[in-house]
Length: 246
Ligand SMILES: [Zn+2]
Image (cartoon, rainbow, N blue to C red; front, side, top):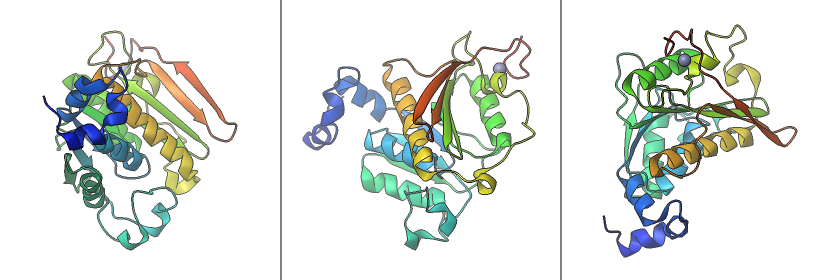
């Protein structure tokens, strides 16, 4: 793969890193990800991946921009209220980097749909879709990059039960719908924390694609924005897991 002078210019700060370099730029260009959710987590995640030259980005979201989203979904502008999030975000990605192919799927992701990415990125705000994506990732042998944010804290992990034999899946960690399951509509969330989670999700996806560093497989990064602390919890496979158990 050869890079044009413009592409070398655009990606210079990544090419300078030995863990990415020219070969990493090539891997990113040939990669395809599916991002489910174009909101507070999917927005920054998609923007960083497009900026890094990730070749094909599929964006799933059936929602439209509401004024109450703009406190954290900074990929949108005030003038975007009422327009499709998936469509707008796709346009933003191509505007940022015309080399990127972005596809808007303006529908709610369900079991009837097919996510075509090599890496699945869970940027949703509901457990039903999280469970579904986890099952699809496990059965199809794909990585699942997963993030969540609520109030002042965020979580990021990579689930790889379909790729690595000893890796836990999302349902090893969350076996069933938590009784206190709540979307950020009901509980409040700090916009900057969602940005931290989305950026970390992009970072994990980038490492998986270029094959560098240690992805958060079997580990859960917990961001405590209020205290200014991060922690990493070890996640273990559950032999009785309904998705990946024996
Ligand atoms: Zn499991």
